[in-house]
Length: 97
Image 1 (tube, rainbow, N blue to C red):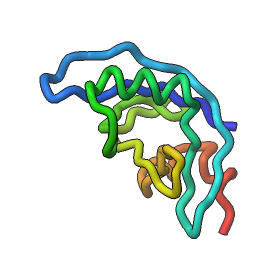
Image 2: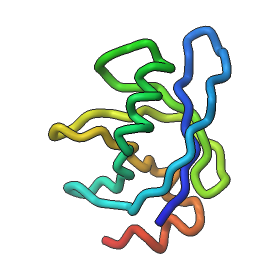
Image 3: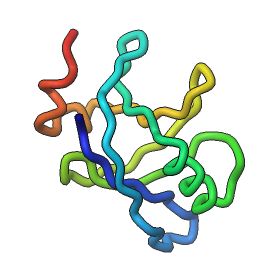
Image 4: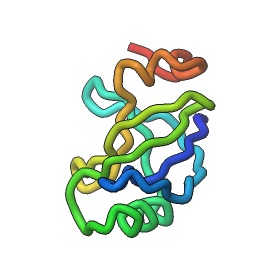
């Protein structure tokens, strides 16, 4: 189980409320990701002032800062763990080939 804090990255640079959740790392094809809970997703969409498309987010994963997007793929919204994020401990222990 990984712990994440997320907020939408606004174009005006305004800080939004950080949203806390935990999720299990899943893998689709070869890509590890965290599923985004519905309540978090609704708030991210509200913060970003959009209804669809990738959501630019910033946050912390296991206490380390990151910036990426939450994207919809195969009818589910996912926070993909990019290469840099995969190096965060203990992410490595959750991702197996």
